[in-house]
Length: 292
Image 1 (cartoon, helix red, strand yellow):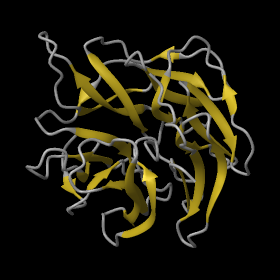
Image 2 (spheres, rainbow, N blue to C red; image 1 turned 30 degrees about the vertical axis):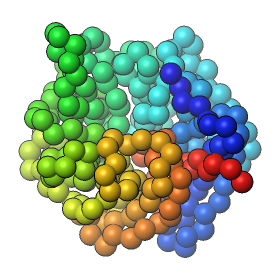
Image 3 (cartoon, rainbow, N blue to C red; image 1 turned 45 degrees about the vertical axis):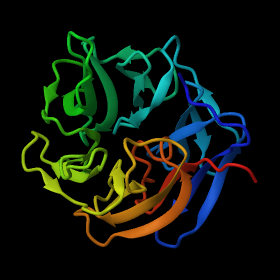
Image 4 (cartoon, one colour; image 1 turned 180 degrees about the vertical axis):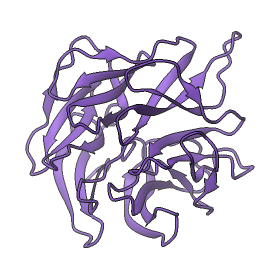
């Protein structure tokens, strides 16, 4: 079911200049819980989800405009634009990944295996491959830890890149296509203690990028490949829940030079997908303050 705002809660879609610190509200709502902004290639629009639907929002401000996608099931907050700028890939509440025209229109289902939930996170720079997190269910109904998979963007057999007891999530291609960045619990014995990693597109050469007391999620790279931004949860957090006091952090692509950008009330929905502007200078994100 689509997420909703709590009583007295607001949703603010914001744009932050990571160099100057300028942080402005693009849209505020006390009715719809919007999530996970992507930028269009021309830098004029943000693509967000809310109430199970997809919207475009002008970076200059205004009201979100719904993008009609036919009878597509309710959407979640995992959506990425194709490099050609004409399509968007989406995860829906049917557990599958779909492709739709960015201007609106009927969607095409990409995944078809029914024993796995598919949570989209990345698309390769050439647009040929999608990276997603798959959660498989055994015959007895038990759900296995999430793993990283890739599959052709037009559909076809998936390739599993990670296959172990460590939950993995947030798989995102680097702009040069040489790495897949992701978060994982493989670096700790504490349940839920996710850190940031990267691996080659074939699943080899895994490197750990962060190792601190906080729980780090969703590491998209800037379009120039120089920096990564991510959501950092308080120590002891399990998963990536909503309504936590979190920090947006910035680091070099190798995980060095860490600095805090902004502290906010949010988490789930704040930055679940790549939220970098095309100029590699600004980030879009969402916070969810309570009360005045």
